[in-house]
Length: 268
Image (cartoon, rainbow, N blue to C red; front, side, top):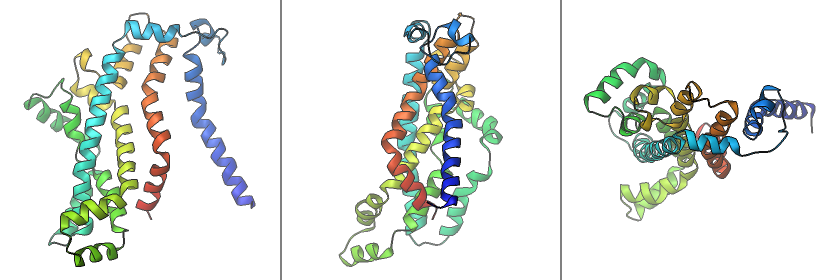
């Protein structure tokens, strides 16, 4: 191994530790007493699941978890379906204005979500979706990032497959569903994982559209819980954070191979 590879390996390990240390402390603190946490201990003097019991009894974390799961899952499915069709259209089909439509679909990169928060909220309120999970799901469906990743991946698929299918009499739908989409599975999984994670962790938009405590998602609920006056301390808060992190960690562990491949091939 060359010196450059040694240095890159050391740098990767250092960056991984910087990222993992707070997560490890959070997980260990969820099993500690308040006294151990305030004393700055890493390992609990006595392992206990009391913090998990307290958070499940005193908070609506089960309801918040379900809200987050429904909004993240439904929105992710919608994004995959809509943006896959859009990406196929702008990457594999030839029609007047295709390039303009592709550039127009990517303008979302240039507009920060905070800039359109007020008009978007007014629209959501007008159609009666405040304190409704559809108020989170519907605004998430148009995703420039998803269209970009999927279209870049689809563009890299050789046209020979498509031409051979046309010679065999395949229709446009046959080509899309039987050839292009099966070959685009890594990019589709990449889009699904990234957007599930983003929507699950989103705090800003759910905070705006959800004013009823029963409709909070986990990020909003945990912040409200930390600032509440119900005497819930660091241990239960860490336990709640661990519970909120588990779905994302599980998704990444199972989809890591496809995620890496999808990102690399989409950006080449």
